[in-house]
Every structure is written in C-alpha cells, then in structure tokens.
Length: 344
Image (tube, rainbow, N blue to C red):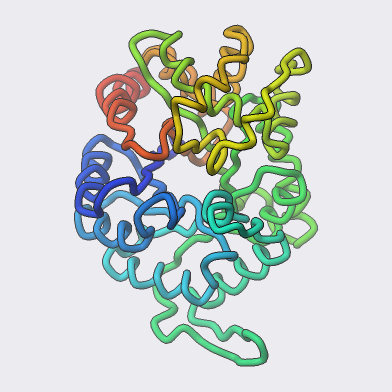
C-alpha cells in the first residue's frame, strides 16, 4: 500500500514530551506527523518541530497547518529551513488561510490572494531565489539545497483550484467519501491545467478524523463535537451533502456559536457536549463514516483499505482533541491497523 500515513500532533505539552511522542510515532511506522500551529491555544510550532527533529531520524515533520496571516513568508521560510538543517528531507510546509490561529486574536482568516502570494514567495525563498517584498528584493541567505514541499490546505472549490495551480500538494479536509474525493480531484485538476501544470504531479493528502475504541458507539460519541462542527461550519457542510448525508431535519442551538474558539476546538468540553446532544445517533454515525476512521480497530482498518483504494498519496489522521495527544489512536495503528494492512 503506497499511501503515506501522517498523525496529527497538537503541541499541547512541553516540547520534550511532544518530541518523545513523535519518536513513538516513528517507531510505530508512521511516515509523518502534522504539528498544529495555534499559538494562543498550544505551544510554539517551530520550537516543537525542532525538538521532534532532534529526537527522530526518519519521520517527516509538517506544519499542520500554518497561515500567512500570523506568519510572514520570510519567517516561515527561515524557520522551516532551520529545522530542515536538523532533519534533511523531512520537513514539509502545510499552509492555509488560518482558523484558530487567527480567530483567537480576533483576526480574519487570510484571503486566498494572500495564501497564493505566500506560497509563491515560500517556494522561491526555499529554493534560494530572490523575492520582492514591498519594493525590496531579498534572498534567504540559507535558502537552496534540499527541497521543502509546500502543501496548501484547501476546503472550498476556489481554494482547491488555487492549490492545483500553485502548490506542490494539497491537504484536503472534506472527508473521505469516494464522491467527495472525486469532486476534489476535479477542482485540483482544473487549477493545474489553467496554470499549465500536470495534475498528476500535484500530491493529494486527505485529512481523516480518526477515533479508535473497542466499541463502535463509544468512538462515535467521542466524535460528536467534530461531527457538529462539520454540520454548522459553512466550509464543511456542503461536503456532507456531496457524500449523501441529509442534514435538513436538525436544528442546532444558537449557543454553539458562543463556544470558544469554536465547537470543534471548544475549551469548555463539557458545555460543548451538552450543546451537541441534539444530533441524532443515526446522523452522527453517517457523518462519522464520512469524516474518516471512527470505530473499532478492525472497522477502521477496513475503512483505511477502502480510502487507500482512491489513489490518495497520504492520509492525515486527526484525533478528536486539540488538548491531548492521540496515544490510543497511535497504538491502535501500530498494533492492529498497520499489521492488518500489511497482511496478504
């Protein structure tokens, strides 16, 4: 199976503890980890990446996901190159518009125009080429050398088309349903063709919510907040429709929009679960199967096999918590899912 597996790592603890967990992920067989960038809620991204680089030797380290609103392209390029010097060939930049990183400081997500400009500037700076900023031409002194791929995180049609036009690869958070992935590929290919690029050379990584329990219902309940987040957020909800999930019958409470910073990353988990109780079990199960791998290890192994058949280059496995490390999911993939997938 050629698909690469990345595990989402929130830097929710001191850097040495995160680095130790990343080393466990490396030993477990993961190709990479995606480390979150949300400075108000979590530890600093590049400090954590540095610690992880020093603690490991093979696993890839991705910024999952940074943005141009809070990090200028020059800062991103310099930081990524510095980490790459410690971990040659193992660093990836995943960049999008911003979510909690911008929302927690009262700032809007970056416009797509800014994302495009940042990606182009990053690619040039990382390659050691000159870039003009505000009338000043600059070159990253420690640029050049090994290639650091720049992936664009994209959800909507415009973002997907842009990603196909400018990025080395695309990280999509749209679910893993085959109809959804097919639609995503159509937008990416359109952008690539408009830019004179070969669509087949644009890598595709799908984000997949991953929650593993010995009981299917328990795993689905752990995913309840994320399922509701998809239901109420306008960038995600349309993809549920593409996957065939009918949501017209539910009426979310208005208090959901008062949760900080949002329902999917709510700091007050108890209050969030109370507000999310409106979602019927049957619809919760449908959304869970659309989002990713939620259930028993055996159930998830079969669903991973199905998703990999869509020809994805990678799967980014996201646990449900922003404030805890996904020990259970890491162990389940190490002990059950990976061995199952490797079996003839």
